[in-house]
Image (cartoon, rainbow, N blue to C red; front, side, top):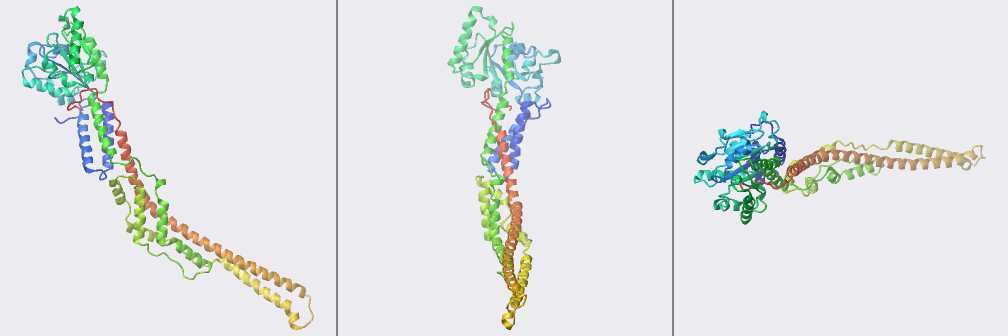
Length: 514
């Protein structure tokens, strides 16, 4: 039967929490689309679709089934526990294969539909007249099943279908037939390992003399141990007198307070799906700081000849070169190698499908090459001579001319054979000073030219690397971080959804409403 949304309206906390975990898995599937093994993705999607259907039934009800043979008095016990005279008792009971249900707190319509309980076989217990007297049993769904030893096959089929769906099985036996082999070999011995989901109620205890009741209870416990069932509680009750009914209600209240088997099973299914998802991602991913951005810029700089162009420009400005340098086209093979190196470093540790997705996400080698070429074309390569050095060179030349003139003046008396003049004592020192000044200015001009040449080369290097930084950021870093962010989110969603729950207390041997 296809599940329909629960009629009770807003989902309770348990259903809400489980639904949130399903949403995490489904979101992770959507984020990882195309990067998971298709078979695994299909399995997870199918599992989550099934879980959603079961969550629509609600997992906040605790299903308790009263199971017993003909004449055990379980229908009377059902009426005694519910406080309502609703279940069929006596002669009419063996004639029907229908299940009777009493629900505390909510209608549980979708769940009861799924369990196959007819609309006229349901009753809600906790009315406004009850105040809080029934609050302890809120969330309990008590089922009165057909007799398991009925001669009608349909009755046994109903019992067999519903047993695995219960959080707790209350086996109701009577003092005459508690040792019936149909009960022990047909049912109880098959439930070894599920003792926590069972209790045996020895009903009609009022028909047994008081001094024999303890011995009878001990005999029931012995038979259970012989069946291999250890630790199954044995309770006594009388639906007719009410003895033991209160204790049974307390026991059911304790069970209703636990997480339902349905909730635990759904949690386990979600955890299994999350584990499958977790195996499709790496345990971690590279951070921005770990991406080889600087190495990529270095590779592109070498491929474009940026260091060589800067060196050539330095030589021109220094005066040691004549040709004005320019950037040539980047070789595709060089860019492809740089791109492959990026993929190897950025995608290290990622599963193959994620690595392939990263390769698709990055710019192609051609796009990278065109980006590098276009960006470096914007770098200004000014080959003009150093103005400071030119000024100093002119000043040195003027000083040199002055030195020559002063030297001629100093040498004139010797050349003319005439007597010395008043300028003789000044011309020689002035000549020496001007020579020294010309030398200093010439050396300074050389140093300034070299400084300016290095500065121009550094500016080209800086602007070129800034352009390459922008290319690497836009075409490599950003798409890589986007994909790694998706990988991280898928991984974290899988971890969040994969919280393991304690093993179910219920039977867990067949289909479950959740």
